[in-house]
Image (tube, rainbow, N blue to C red; front, side):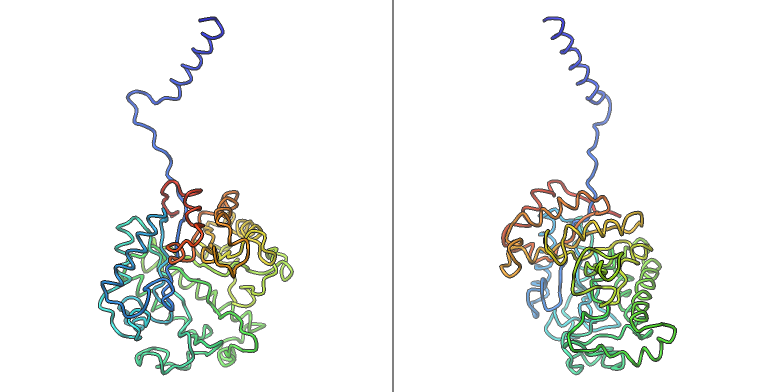
Length: 407
């Protein structure tokens, strides 16, 4: 062996020895992946579960555990389970009736406890269970008499505002705000849920030609505000702040997260807003100051529903993700991105959503922003159907190893 080759061989051997663990040392452990990989399970109108009302308890349980197994197979680690879709309950609640989406009749006992089972079975599979509540929606119709006789909305019709073909509790009434918190916290008190999760419904989405009639409440409680809009935002701010504090007191360690519509304000409305031209702005239309909740760390995580493709003119995924990353920077509020899996393969959603790689491209883009701590997919039945293989592509490209959720 010549001088040069011998020296090269010696250096290579030394490098190999230096890289190898000592013979008596424990093998090095690969660093665990930590990121949110969540899925929503919507129960309103039997969207994801149960497949229809009136199934037996055993059939409902089998469908539910099947969805949890589906999450595990896709290397997901959290389930956002909708347990209060319309001022009702998927557990035996002293405040509100059993959900009609279980049996077909609101108030009828389904013969088992879905929330308790979901928490137990999720934890047995290594999944987090985030209890998903809709704070103010009462019904997807406007007929109070269709509600269970025991329903609080029937006992307190003055709490209710019909709007857009639905019934809502009035967020401007302090007694309503206290009641909905009590009703939701009953679940937190009874079951070891990993998080309380709100969706995007605060004040309802605007309906053309209709007015949300809260004049009387504004006259009673809005005197200190320069406009009704400011008063409405304060009502929602109070809900968020009070709920956060009460969750911590009720079950310390339980997270509180919110998944809003992704556009806080357009830049044309507010220079702090995003480079979007959305028709709805949460600050102005839903009276939800989502940016403030993040910047002031009122909540543990935010999961904006960035339900548009890369390049979508009015609300580009590639513009909204960096905007939210900047909002979350240095706040302590974790940022997850809500993903529109339901659009993938739907011909009505446009050409971008016919490409199985679109969704995977979202995760690739988000990897450039360290504030993004994971993604949540809407929704469970779309994970199951995976019409064009978009979810399978995400798993293959990004989820080769299991991950634990951030805490």
